[in-house]
Image (tube, rainbow, N blue to C red; front, side, top):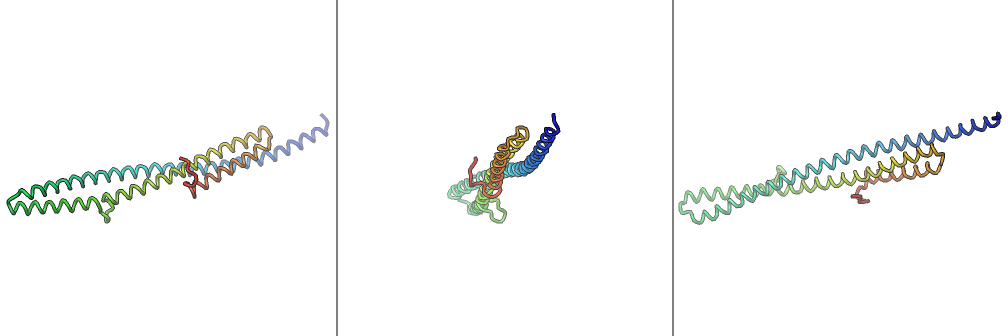
Length: 196
């Protein structure tokens, strides 16, 4: 090998080394984006599960209140029937007081704005938790797609170093951009692209 050929190989290796550093930097940036989207995705998934449990608990509480209200209303109706057949005035007065108490209790089971635990308030709270669950789930799906895009971009950028095909680096950049867009959709407009 001549000195001239050695110089050419050294220049080529130096040029390739500079390009590899750029690709390594690209991979580092993509890995940072991947870490961010994975963290956001895990947070959204946890929020989705939490809100699903909350909604389920609220609906169970709603059902329990509704059953209790129905039982109390039934007792009040039965009391009204018994009132018509009771001759003793003292017994009638006591029964009427009990019927009034049952009706107040049934009304309280239906609506308790001060505690938020009437069936009407529980229903609203459960629907709100379901909405938050759906929002978090939509975000999660966007972050998952973004993570997949970033992983593919890292593979493509790595293949650029091995093959020397510069087009792979450009495709990697475009796939990274798609991942960034999906992350932004997940953060700001998760329902714009319905993915689930």
